[in-house]
Image 1: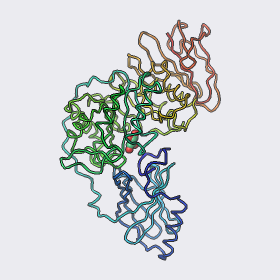
Image 2: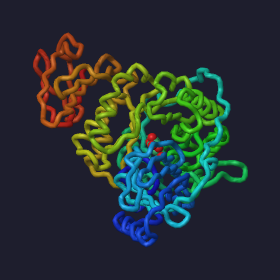
Image 3: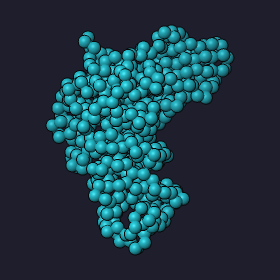
Image 4: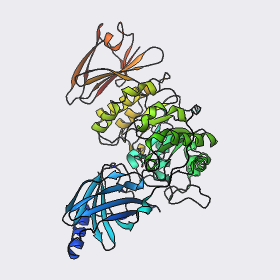
Length: 516
Ligand code: GLA
């Protein structure tokens, strides 16, 4: 994959223009350098702009600010110019300077004539070979902050009374998303039964944007998306809705054109395209505004959405910064990210999911905590773990945005994503988020109130061995045995003892029950 964050296990067919195995690149770098004798004492010193041209007509940039004294290197990196990151573990490997940043990127840098020759290695993805050019400090300066509205409460837009359900391109495809893949995904959403199970939004994440605005200042698409209006019409013709992505900053996280200073114009464009859902990603705003201004920046976007003439679900993506759950609804937000990016592994998913209980008071119809999109079916976890992932997200009344390739999903993945009894827990009309009742060794018992007086109970085993859990009715707030106990993964009513229930839960697995 190319220069995008965060590192993902993505198809490698996508986009990298100049791709060589890392070993070859390093060898090449090394031989070039030995040919030039050794490094001068400050060969890497200065500010540099790393250009990464994409095959669809966009070039993204990353700034490197390097201070070299002999073999000692320090500095800062501005990945995709969108954020500022301290260089981690800088060191010389022979003549090549090596350092990383916490986007999961490692850089291998050496001087080549007037420029730098750079190999960028994103975790879990192909290395990219590119050139960095010398720039001045002024070239790195972000645009100035714009006036922000005084804080006020915006009216509720009335959308998504139950958590939004759909699909988003990022987790699986990252930059390898295009018009055709979106159309095929819309087809698959219908053909696989996902649409019938409630999934409706087909959401294009970052990397759809063109290199520049048109003469009137309108945002444009790149070659991967030749006609957004036609694509939108296609998605709508399937009975589905279209989602898009932008940032309130000057570039998106991927380094593409974003909406700073064009808030109204862009929201109008999205409305004209027939967009129904918009994810608004903070990223480069952090180089323009302070975190204390998060609310006003999102309010400005909310006001522009209010004026755009089309109902559009407003999805805030700010990684849980600024305690967004306290004010997200007041800027007309329908959902807000409560965490950094999810990754397709047990540690990331469980670390995020089991930490969400404290935010339960902030979820309500129309306004949802968003622990990030689903990884179900992406291959980094077992199906037992994916059932836990899906169950936990449903217990959290989380938005259910599938993040896998719907066109080729195996039956077991489809069965997880379309389990209607589990989805009904997520979509329950009460709109209450579940919380952890108690923990017994590695077993966590969670409860979510359900309309009509019942509750869903999730018995989760976070341990590495199978666990037996015994739970009394009083431990889950009941006086006696409920009338109906339904196992939502086994799809059957179960009988239990009069004083409580016991369950065998596999390692990293879940027993999910509906008690009435
Ligand atoms: C951020 C977001 C992700 C995704 C990428 C796209 O990392 O948190 O969900 O949108 O940006 O660049």
